[in-house]
Amino acid sequence: MGRPTLNSVAEAAAVSRQTVSNVINSPEVVSPETRERVLAAIERLGYRPNTAARQMRTTRSQIIGLCVPPSGNGVSGVVLDQFLHSLTATAERYDHRIMLFTAADDEAETRAYADLIASVGIDGFVLTSTHHDDLRTRWLLERELPFVTFGRPWGAEDTHPWVDVDGAAGTRLATDHLVRQGHRRIAFVGWPEGSGSGDDRRAGWAAGLAAAGLGEGPQVAVFDGVEGGRSAAARLLDGGGSAGSSGSAPAHHPGAGDRPSAGDRPGAADLADAGAPTAFVCASDSLALGVTAELRDRGIRPGADAAVIGFDDTPTAAVLGLSSVAQPIADVAAECVRQLRTALRGEAASEPATTLFTPHLVLRTT
Image 1 (tube, helix red, strand yellow):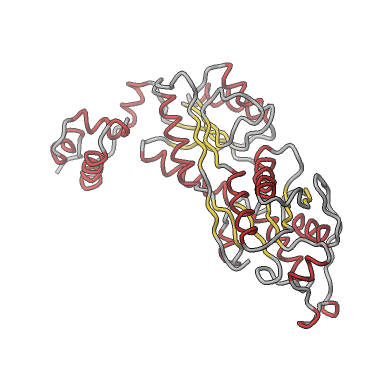
Image 2 (cartoon, rainbow, N blue to C red):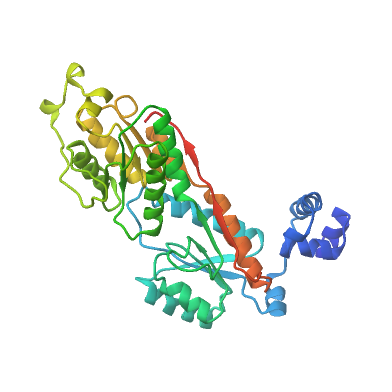
């Protein structure tokens, strides 16, 4: 048997040649039942589109560019890994390839855009880590180049397609759960002001406290990482956290001889009587892991004496039993590809497409 063709797939699926083409290039215009039948025939016959011929016909390279930001602390950075994997898998289903590159800052990234367009003929870009006054989105908009961002245009109008996860809804879920559990002094451990996603997550915590009539809660802002979480917890437990506070304090790390005995271990009631938080909502799993480490070093049992909830639901959180807010990363990646393909076909609506996904709370032992 020769190499399968568009016609042989159409015959096997009992559809027209155009329907097969639509399933490959514009699946949203085909009914789910027909699409599944065609995809099954493609898989059974081992059909692969002639990419070279299509590139000559459409003048498209089928390449999507994405700049990889510097590696994080190894915990929350897993989210980007998950996004890249899902984005690549989704793009490949439509015969697109993801080209990764690096840049030191926004200006260097825009220079990379220009080089890639000139040298590779790249079709469009997916951007991550959006922020206030984002030079990259302005550069692409001015040149009318197709792109979509994983992240909102913080502080700017919706002038381009974007996909994001509602961080405020996630921390609101965490705060509401802690309130229902009876906690009244719920702290927030987050990042310094100015981070769009960080400020968004802080807002959800504040809204949850306000809805419960608890007023302003204690908070500390530190840079992301386990050590940042440790220092923030130390400050909060020692009475140093306050509304709007930032910075960090040296973490208290007792030695084996300092560790409280079971009878001396402070419980939730003791923490409340001392004015210390009995629960912590954190902007990332990295921070939450630091908080739990500091609690344990002080003889305070996470999940029994104090509650801790992280954000991102990383594999590390699952292994260590950390409660966390989970982002639907696979859905985000799929929507990024869908929006970018719409832009590449020139079918963008008068208003840019925007999609905000809602996360969910994963409860574990903490």
